[in-house]
Amino acid sequence: MTDLVHAEGLSKWYGQVSGLNNVTVSIPPGITGLLGPNGAGKSTFMKLMTGQLKPSQGTIRVLGEPIWGNPPIFARIGFCPEQDAFYDRMTGLEWVTALVRLNGHSDADADAAAKRALERVELLDAAGKKIGAYSKGMRQRVKMAQALVHDPDLLILDEPLTGMDPLMRRKTIRLIKDWARAGKHIIVSSHILHEIEAMTSNILLINNGRIVAEGNVHTIRDLIDTHPHTVYVRGADPRALARRFLVEDDVLSMKFESDAVVVETARPDSFYARLTELAASGEAGQIDEVQSPDDNLQAVFKYLVKQ
Amino acid sequence: MTTGARMSFTTAARRVFDLSLGEMLWSRRTIFMALVVAGPVLLALIARGVEVFGMSALRVNGRPVPGFSIFGVMIWSLYLFFIVPVLGLFYGTALMADEVEDKTITYLFTRPVARGAVLVGKYLAYLACTILVVLPSVMIVYFMLVPFSQLPSTFGNLVIDLGLLALGLAVYGALFAFVGAFFKRPLLIGLVYTFGFQQTVLALPGSLKQFTVAFYMNALVPHVMPSDGVSSLLQSMFKENPPLWVCLFWLFAILAGFLYLATRVVERKEYILEQ
Image (cartoon, rainbow over the protein chains, first blue to last red):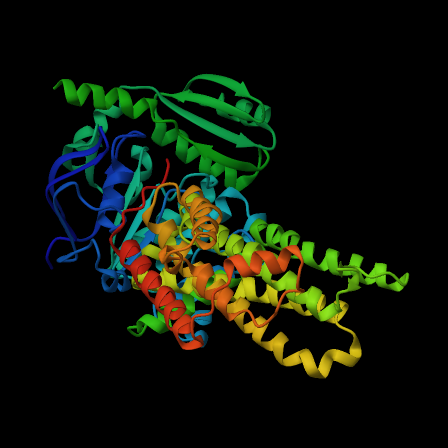
């Protein structure tokens, strides 16, 4: 198969501001992670590869075809955007059904496909609820559902795990990997290496609108580990969470923020594994949200750029 | 695997219409529209109340003006001059802007439908939405003002009025859909056009008025204003009578032309969402 995405001298400017700067890259089939801190150019690149933006310079082809002004190609592409934007008055089922109807499905097909997609993201029970009443994690999942509802060849996911609890993150990562095993292709962006690493070893590192590095995730892995990693955990009982975190020596420091605890860890892998187990057992109360600021990654990028 | 069929432009537009109608009907803008159309209903209610006490709601040269004539004044001066252009302006310019502002445009533009079909679908939703609110209010006003005995002789005019208002909503909506898609400050431009340019050139001699929607709409109004009143004076200033077919031809040409231009702009325009 040809490359999923091929960009040649691709640049995008917003007036005087450069969003992407002379990028030439080919993304191969399979899962590819697009990794970079906030404002690095990930979303601009994703908007260019989903035909929402027109290149200021250069070209971009997706699945072998130009993407700008080429709506038929979206029959083969599913896109989960970063923004938390919905038709809040619609139920999850109504929304996903209405969107898949735009893919040409008949009413009966659309309803069945929407239910299947909501089931895949474990949202079928809440399918009849208005999206406005969904939690952040549920909103992320319904966005995923609309992206995969038409069974696309290529899924493009912009920060899909943001706002999900640890269990749902694990399930979503499994869903993405299952999707790839079924012969589909995924491009997923994140500012958290561990999320990307859990899905694929093939990454593109992006910073300041340029591709800084591409290839195997393990080559930058060691660099990341030398920098402390910050994790924000919001839950029902932050103090109980803190007590559990202190049991192991992978936590360097902690601080409390209203209903959350912010942890600095030198061994993010082991910490995330513990966090997932903790969420599953419920020993420290319910965990509602896990976020990782991109400060950790920023340090690595500074290092890479200096090199 | 379920594969969708390739859709025609009209099917795609119809499906966008299905998606948009509910959202539009229950939006804050509809509350604004309901308040606007409540004005004439309130006036009709007051007129009716005055008549209950044996007085006349409107007198010209000391003679009471019949209910159907008051209704005609309201159609002409409130609905055609104000309500229809205002609704066309506020809805038409916001067809794409609302989706961009709410950042939901991404979901529509990453589906295999032409962007022009998205605009047309949303335009049809606007038309259905405004017709569903405006026309019932006209009927309420009619039944409140026109005595029961006059219904058989005036009902035909009511039907013409309803058709005229629907046509006005369609034409102004198409015009302002283009303004909304093309210009950066569409509301300001729309307001200047509607209440500045149109009103000014209509009051002046010359052929510039032929570049206004109101010129053709006014010519189609079936009502004659009560003589010697302010309304009749205004009507005599504003109203000319080009043939019916000329008016209809130009109104449909404006509708089709601006809707086509709007779709072309949307097809080529890059919508950048605020981060």
